Image 1 (cartoon, rainbow, N blue to C red):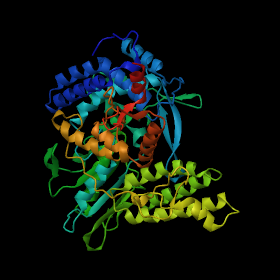
Image 2 (cartoon, one colour):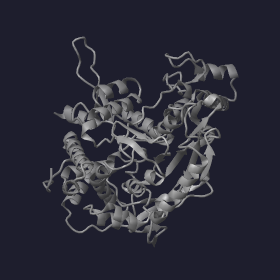
Image 3 (cartoon, rainbow, N blue to C red):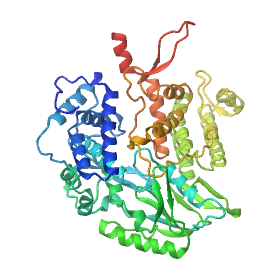
Image 4 (cartoon, rainbow, N blue to C red):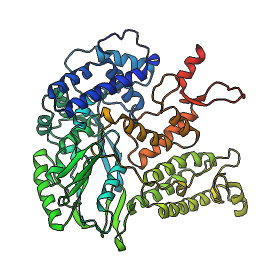
Length: 566
């Protein structure tokens, strides 16, 4: 689907299944050509992707509908939140044949752990869409090259894969790797060397466009500042560029593979194992001396890329001392048992969050408390469900109960404790025997408990497996079904039965660029589902069967409206 042919584009009647299939097919062809080492074919297919009408539509939809930052404007204030605006943007970008001129990014700050702030650079809307178009051309080429234990900001991979890779490496009494280089890089996104990165991109057709984004500059409080290094966090393409810049880190650390394939990756017994999630990584070694050598070699490798270790936060520890990674604590206890639990810092944060949220809800009704807390509980417990978290879940539940009980007492200062308990606490969940569940008697809704989340061992992604590999289509479909099951209840069963697609247009119902990667993203995932069902972004409907019962299925509300009009 190439060429302009977009006059009078009706955004609401686009056949998204066809668009998604076109982009997926072309990505797979790029991946296969890269895997085969056919660079000429890779470049020709990438040019085809950059001209693709389907890629333009897909990218506009990704940035203006799917992305969490779709309502955030760059320095020009432009957003596209309606169907006509999205259609006009797609037509304009696809027809534009003039040389691209990148605009500066807008500096904003978001809170991070420890009360600090993380700087983000928000590109203008058109640059974000162009970055999404370019990413669809560039990413599959590098997916065929990336190292097997790189898990951050890659489709189909995530934090749980990284944690499971560490567990597999260190588990068991006979594990030979006892020492860990727990590494931290200093402001990696902000310090990437532009020239070195552009050399790595080689003859990629949109290389000059990427060079413009890297050097576009930043506007903060109305003042422009040039950017001579780094790639701004906030751009669609920035995480992928960081992965490209850090490609080769395993080899630099001394990792050597006996076999490295989609169905598995096996390191030589005498070499270290490096597990990386974006700019966070650990190197698991046999001796302290081997860990020190890896530290030294990596320092030399990082320098020409503009990067360096944060010496204060980088250290070597024995596995019996334990270390924190991606919110988990990994430690070998007496008897050789390796346990992975929520870190003390993560537990402290969720306890403080619960206290702050409940305090902010003083004066609200029980329904508001339930709607505010449940996504937080679902999100945090979903992220930590793959660790040894049962005791922590129970302890946090007790902390939650104390705050909810205090909220109920403050809401009714003139009532007895017995009256308060009778009004707000009971066995609300019919499938559980818990008697002290906080709920609303009128609606029957209730606050979940962390301990209700089942502990599930994560099934780590295999070897070099990529979602762009056409030979692994069935493998990735199976992993996607497991993601649907996390929504719970009827929604989950319908998503699985419908393969995650709308029964009318066959478009994805709950599409995401990547799966949730931290408690906040899992929380947002839960909110999205609740909001979608509540506001009919997904509609449960269907014909009536012979027995007079409704046959439920999930359908986009916009598709339901069109079916009704017909």
